[in-house]
Image 1 (cartoon, helix red, strand yellow):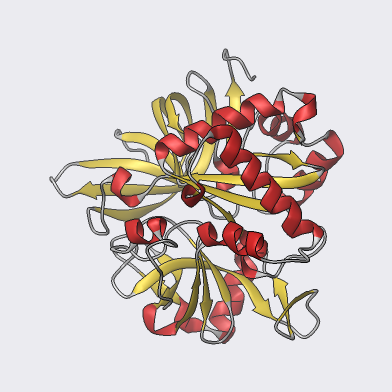
Image 2 (image 1 turned 135 degrees about the vertical axis):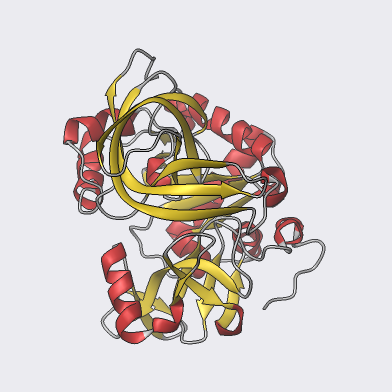
Length: 359
């Protein structure tokens, strides 16, 4: 574990009780790199998903070693089962099998909020690093948020980027997130801002990649992605932004709710609450639910996902079709409700009808 100074670590101090949170990365003792998921973790384990593995033929380099990106969930699971089973575990509170790194197997924690300062302190940045630093500083200055709430994640954080890499930005804190989101929306409408939406060719390429585990008609994909703020280009380089609440803002700890899997389900529903749609994890309140497949329950009241691709996916008043894991959620006070968790291959959210403005 790293030591953090007071000047470095507002975010780490805030999350110290729960350990690293969404946006952080972990390097294991074997040199595997994992992306941390969520804000709460079991004792002695950080929920995190495999992203980069050592590979002598890999196109990414770090300290004389070669790595490759593991893009798809099935390959992550297969690699871990066959070579690194210690990074798979079952948890009765979070529900089901998860990927994660035990505290004893952590070699290093990478804090995304420290990366901009590191880049500013260095000379001879490559083009990817320059773009990332310029983009985060533009967002920070234009939105008027603290530099300690905005960071650079993904391959750039780890020093494993390649010339084609996108910029992965994280913003922490509800007020900061909305300030940056508002700023981005305004920039996307200004041709001279340097920020723009993906064009059709780029969306076609993104669809080819995502549809491998998130099936959806192309026209639906095109319509939904075009209206998103979290994804676009800065100076012709792709960006993706995760808006993340701090643990103190959520007011929840590991064990406050218990999730039990009831199998897969497919539903149609009307979105009644999309205030949490920009955040990772995202949540949509739903009503007027119709079960198409799976166990039917009367208290299915929300959709939730830890995958950034489902943020900003639906708006209030829209009729959606969704497929995912049906969970029974038991709270500390004894109350129970159900949710549909969207994330694993084959799951998704598609807007069927809308009377709201897509702009």
